[in-house]
Amino acid sequence: MNFLTIMFLTYMKFFVSLFILVNPIGMIPIFTSITNHQSTHQRNKTNLIANFTVFIILSIALLLGNQILNFFGISISAFRIAGGILIISIAMSMINGNLISKIKKRDNNSSSIHMNSENVGIIPLAMPLIAGPGAISSIIMWSSQYSSFFNLIIGSIVIAFFSLFCWLLFRVSPLIVAFLGKTGINIITRIMGLLLMALGVEFIVSGIKFIFF
Image 1: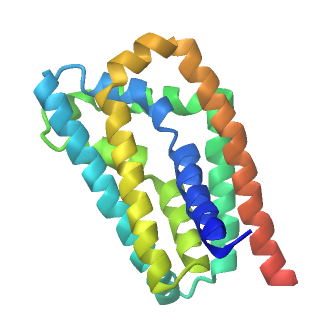
Image 2: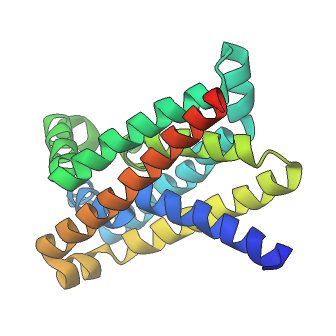
């Protein structure tokens, strides 16, 4: 396996792990629920603002994550273990079907604020729904392992593609909801939860190995 193939697989793994962690397909019902009061033009604008904000937030985590950890004196091994535990907890909510229902309940309780706010694309869509603690933790852990200038630049491009992909999914969200239905989205969410749990275990194992071995 040559160098270019290894690099391609590395960045592809980065993209796929982000996709599994964020689960944008599972977020589609949340997006349609939050924006159901908006016109098509407003919904498209909200979608654009949300995913541009996601790109900014995740890029900052990628470029400055290590500096933030160093400032607080947190070792990357400890952060990997903590991030792995957080990711496993998110995965459990996805597998049990509790994650989306909890988000919907929270959004319904604060709908009067979001419905009248032009910043709905930033809060809650961009953060914490898409660029949440799990995604930010995962990116910081990735940047600590691939910290060269070249890797950070390519990583930023991967984040841009991820944000673009989320934008496209939300743009065609009515068609996806009609095609998959609630059952289909629930099945996909649970499969992604299982994959995400494996990713969390991998983070914890790598952190423990670095500390003790």
